[in-house]
Image 1 (cartoon, rainbow, N blue to C red):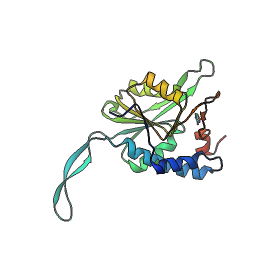
Image 2: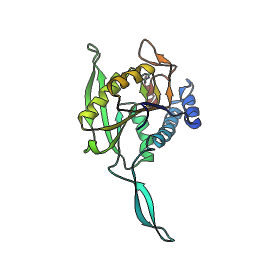
Image 3: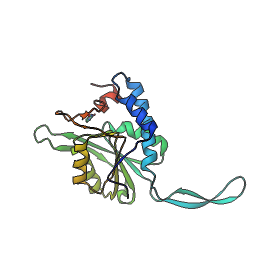
Image 4: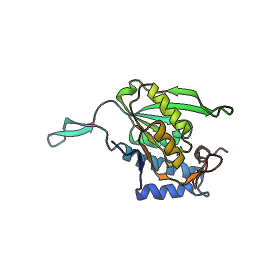
Length: 210
Ligand code: URA
């Protein structure tokens, strides 16, 4: 069982993250760095995947060799910024199943409202990795995990690039059984809900919108 919060402090992850934070990093560069970081984070979060021995033929002889066991894992992107993490992870785990969760915030109630939800079958038998680059207030992340649990998921992990202490606390309260893996635990949220020092709006930076 993983700790509730794991910060991946690998030098390559930290260096690339610093480049991503910089204001003068272009959209193209940001996207490339995000793809690279997501692969390094995917390597970390898949450490405990179950393995089994299978007999294979090498050009030299037969051998029992380790392979991934069980159902394919499910990567679930929390729209829209989650897609930036998803793309890189899929290059490393091409056979993963993929789901999407779309939520927006009702301006009156401030509650997250679902506008899209599609996940693979047999969610209860898969490791489900929910991805969203920014764990800010934690409200939409917690709501996305609620939906995944309603779909049957039992073994869920949350992967982000940056986490605010407020978001980690919210997730721990709502979903203590869901470990969080991040590249950085930042200082705080500002009054508009942005992570400080952060990197700005992750979706805008990766898609070139404003
Ligand atoms: N979402 C973002 O894209 N950036 C933040 O700082 C907080 C939430």
